[in-house]
Image (cartoon, rainbow, N blue to C red):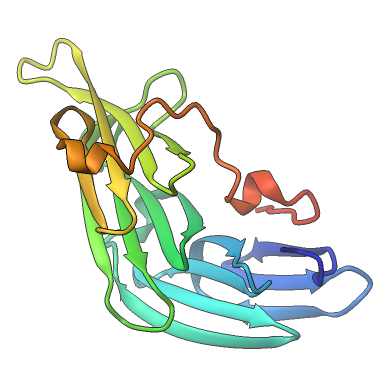
Length: 214
């Protein structure tokens, strides 16, 4: 992985998305972009996902100067409220996490998860509402040795005076989220709920040669 890729930059400027190889030309990927994220797969294919000004989720692939584009679905009616998006590739599935700030409540967010394979249009969609920021974190995500994602966040309880801790586990094979407290033994067999690993598959943390800037 990354052995055949020269260092390059992916960046956004004036709502346009660019990719620039070191000591080579700059290529424009798309325009009217609000937010974006990127990652590599095991074949050194670069996957770039973005949300445009119309609130559409778009998937790009880039290799050897060639770009392919696919509009996936509508993800937001107010894309200016999007605060962050990240991409993780697990078992050939792309997992996009979008953070959208509430227009009504301060420090309240919605996190959406989109799971799909680039080879088809079957997208699994999951939404987590009323997430509150705590200690500068909106949510935390780890990936265990069995390629399951562990998603944790805090939300208000029924009386809104205290925060309620939530922990969910995504089984990649079943493509489902399970509350960690309600997992069956058959589900636990394939999940390391005590995993302490950090995320290594996200391009922000994995590849020093790529710089994101705004």
